[in-house]
Image (cartoon, rainbow, N blue to C red; front, side, top):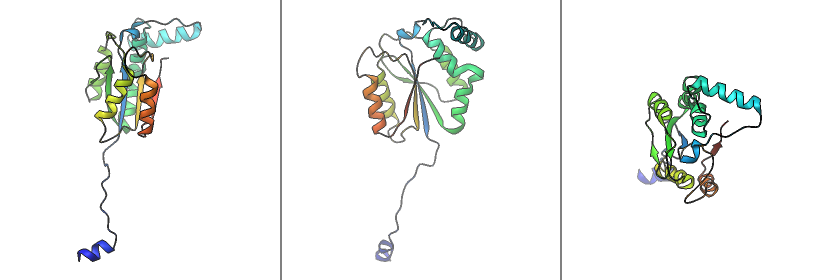
Length: 174
């Protein structure tokens, strides 16, 4: 019976049955406290209006990142969570995962402050990939100014992620 079973070529395969992850990385290093000036007056006014509507006063880089995630009652996070398991990380020297429930995620984003002394974007990206190595994420979204002050550059870590089959999207507000 075993030989017949083997000759028939029956194979047992394991497949993931849950939703894949989408990871949102938010840079919370000190460089994100900078408020950039835009030469385009119309863009500047639209950003200020969106920031005000989202509940933020200053047009700092961290507030722009928060605005993207939280505006329209956290619509972006909600839409991601409808199709994926959402995971949030903050980066500034040491990576720390945020909570997993949408309301808690939104509260964590709103309460985030850019006080990190270093910005280790490459290391942070690699840490996320290591954390999820059993179930690689469908995508990684990075909200950052792209300034790496210590460790591996972001480009090298992103190339590593692509080799692992994980698409990375780098978003800089606006």
